[in-house]
Figure 1 (cartoon, rainbow, N blue to C red):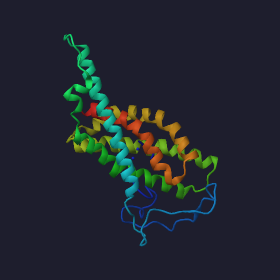
Figure 2 (cartoon, one colour):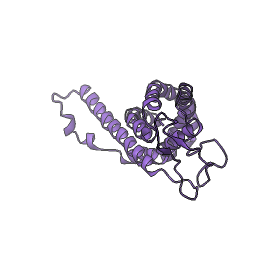
Figure 3 (cartoon, rainbow, N blue to C red):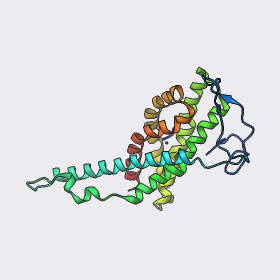
Figure 4 (cartoon, rainbow, N blue to C red):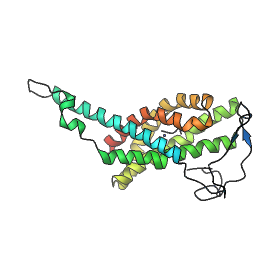
Amino acid sequence: MWSGGFGVHGLGASPSWGFGGRLPPPRAVTKGAEGGAGEELKPDVSNDGKWRFPLKAGMTSGGLVLLGDTAAQFFGRYQRIKSAQQHSDGPEKKNVLSDETFWQHDWRRALRMGGYGFLCYGPISYGWYNLLDHLMPVKNTSNFLIKVALNQLVLGPIVVSIVFSWNALWTNRLPELPGQLQRLAIPTLIDGWKFWTPVTFLNFGLVPLEARVAFMSSCAVFWNFYLSTAVSKRAA
């Protein structure tokens, strides 16, 4: 979810950092500063200094969020069919796979969640990690702990707010959003901390910068399974 799972380059760092804006001159950060040698880390900007949409990060995240939602939908239908069978008085129980309702996929929900991953989660996580590495390029214990803390205390609430807002927007329930956030944001955030804190330690401690979005998005398949189920139930 908040891998990174929800802005862009320079999120909140300076008024000049943003969509179509210019980045300040990047520091020359090499893998030597990160514990290796030789390769320079570059921000995702074009030659004229303007921000570019991180297409690869968006597609990776969108696809994996879609995968998590698909798994959640199939599992939810499986549970409903099995529950109905258990409460049925009929002598025979049909195979779940032979039940037509098992294959009735909610494509609107799937596209809604996939769009969230592509347009929100991927770009935000990509920009967030580049910002953290721009501000704290040296790999040491203090920077590591600061990154983990910022991931949970800053990015986490942002992602939770965005996913509920995105869902409310596309289900025409924006008037209900304040109440949903008051009731559900904190429990979802706490669940996220339980899942993402150990994953974040692995992410910042072992995974190279260029692989972080993919790694966290892969972990996010499991989180998105939970999140898609939770958001859809709460929106029902």
